[in-house]
Length: 185
Image (cartoon, rainbow, N blue to C red):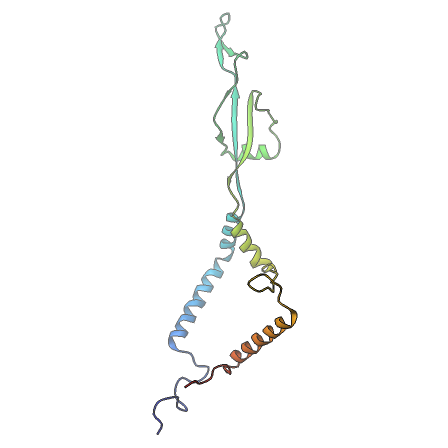
């Protein structure tokens, strides 16, 4: 009887997976199902992160008031400079809708009234945007340069020889064989 080495009929049969592998695959299936159930929500969150976010602000400008000595009432003092409020975030949906539909007149910053202006409050995320585009349309083709470390172009015949060697190596690996390894004693 032989000592050591592979024995005929020993080991796991071909195509039969280890229990740990089966358990890992079951967990992965459950994980994928859970993620697929949330696919719409996840995509919406990614799209939201990819796009810039704008908020609408307004500045209220008015003249200071002064007391009219004759009428004893407060009136606008147009001889003074306009008083500008700090930028105020617009939260009213109706006010935002009116701005977007053009119902408010455009008032110059030097005129009395309310000036509205949109401001980017969150930059677009280019990394997330590229991920979405890559998943949707596939990755963009990247050109491969055939150069040596010094930057010189590799001749066509050497490229072909290298491609053949890589193809041969990969086909041997696929078939389970490894013809390149030799016993050295």
